[in-house]
Structure formats: C-alpha cells, structure tokens
Length: 120
Image 1 (tube, rainbow, N blue to C red):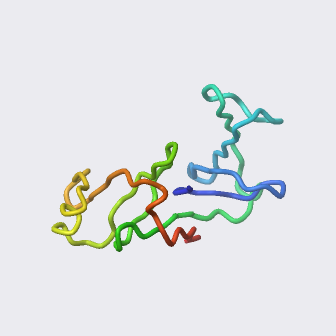
Image 2: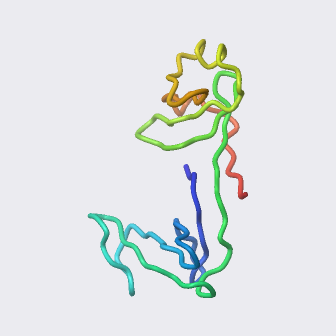
C-alpha cells in the first residue's frame, strides 16, 4: 500500500521525498549512487531534470461500508484513516481520534474492499 510521492528514474519507479528543487529517492537494496540511510533502506538525491513523473500516490478503500485511505500495512492488517467526515460514524467503528477530527485504526486486510491506488 502506498501513500506518498513517487518518481520515475532510469525506467523504474521509486518512493520519493521532494526537497526544494531536488528529490530524494529510496530503494530497499544498494545501487550506484545510493547511500545506506538505515539497514535495508538506501537513499540517493536527484536534481531537477534527472527524474520524471513526480506524482503523489494515495491508496483508498472501503471498510465496513465507509471510505478510508490506507496509510500502512502490517502482516494481515491495514492502518486506515476515515475520510467520511462524520465523527459519530468514526466512533461507532471504534476508531481512535488521532488528531482533532482525524480518525484512524487497524482493519483486518480481509475485510477491506475496493482498494484503489490514485495518482494525484
């Protein structure tokens, strides 16, 4: 499940983080020009013109008949954030109020339907 920026570099798509005119790209394995930022995570800085298609990707879904975005995945669970805008519904679903009016929780992946990756 993806929720964040991606860019295309040398024909491959990478998770990315814009930084002014530069973009940091991330890979799970070492490669030319990549430096290890932590075990199993490698980063490389690209300059404007070295990459293409800077896009934001967001995964949406439906859980228990309500709309959500998917923030993360762990084992057979998805971290979801309610986007329906109705706090009584969020509370009835047993979601925690992560921030004022922002409700999140863990949903069993098998109960989630209509997974869709949006490119914004």
